[in-house]
Every structure is written in structure tokens, then in C-alpha cells.
Length: 261
Image 1: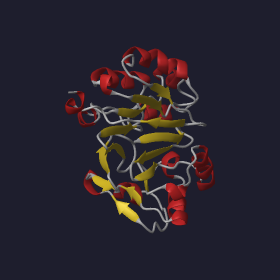
Image 2 (image 1 turned 90 degrees about the vertical axis):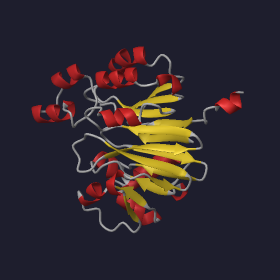
Image 3 (image 1 turned 180 degrees about the vertical axis):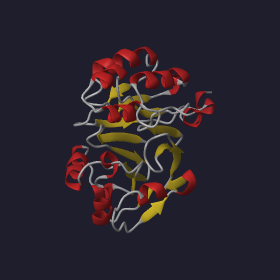
């Protein structure tokens, strides 16, 4: 399995995931033309995709989904709440995720995970293929016990560290938006992300990508100051950016006890 990013932040998100017999784009918060250009940077096009998958209905995650689905005749997976929250027009191959039930796309196992976020029926996802467990966890305001339990033993994580509380409090957002971002249904702070990482098994992580970093309420220096102390054991730590996302990260199946014998 491997994954890469078209971009990560409030101006648009998209994560490209490939496995042995398929590929999907998780979210498309860009216009279709912009998404095509960003896919081309990764030497891919929408024609290479097996499916589109959506976390929730906010524009920085869903903007280009319907147009891409129609032009390239791609199946789209999302929860009923996400679908009914916006007028997306006709989606020829709509696959509704009912009750957060797990499903498969080819050999890829997809586990939807409910998260506390200010959307109608938001979901984050865990992907399993060839013995690899890859978790994507962004756009949530707090770590519920269920979320922590499901993401505690991943081989790789794409994890939100959205804001620095001091920068958010003193920044340009109006009070209502500051309350929303910093609330239990908004986005994770650097400190919340660090606390989560301190509680899970980071020794197993082949790769950790810190994502959805706010351009107005956070900085790379602020995030690293909080997160570096709890990521010392991680083999690879990377920080995603809005404009460039990040390039391909290859994951390999962990060696089993039988293979080590």
C-alpha cells in the first residue's frame, strides 16, 4: 500500500491511496481541473481510480467530488447524512455507507469510523490491505474512546494537528468561528494530537503525517514544538502542506513471527 496527498488544509483536501488491485481518492476539496493537475503531479489521473470516498460535506473535502464522479463514471462512497446535506446533483454510481458498516473495494478493507465534527454524518476511515493498517484521522474536535481504540495500532497515520490554541485565540477569526474550531466538534489542537500520540503505540508506525495544519492559526514551528517529543520512535514523520500536499509514502506489511523465525 502507498498514499500521497493532493493538498491538506482549509483550502482543499485530497488523499490518494493505492493498493495491490486498486486506487481511490479520499475527498476532493478542489475543482475538478485543479484536482486533475494535482493528480498529474503524482503521475496519476482520475482514470486510474477505482472509487471516490468522502469524509463529510464541507467544501474543502467535497467540492470536486460530484463533477469528477460524473465525468469519469466513478463510484462514490459516503454516508447518507453527507449525501443529503448538499445538492450534489446526479451521482451515477452512489454507494451509501449505512450505519458506518465496513466494506471492501477490491481487496481493500475500508472501516468507517464516526467522529465528533460539526457535519451531518462525518466519518474518518481505516484502510487495511496486505497486512497493512493505515488510518486517516482529520476533522474532529476531540478524541472519543471509540476513535482512540480503533486507531491505536495502525502501521501508518495521517493525523490532524489543526491549530495552536494561543494563535487561534489571538488570530483573525471572529469569536463564533474561534469557538467552533476550538470546540469539541471542531478541529484538534497540537496539544490534543500530542496527547493522542502519547497514548497509542507509536513504535509500530512506519509513517506519521501531520495534516490539516491551519495557515492562520498554526505554524510548522508551533506544531513541531509540541509533537516532536512524542514522535521520537516513529520511523518517518512528515508534515503535509496546503499547496503541495506530500509525495508517495510506501508502506510494507510488518514481518510476522513466522517470517522472523
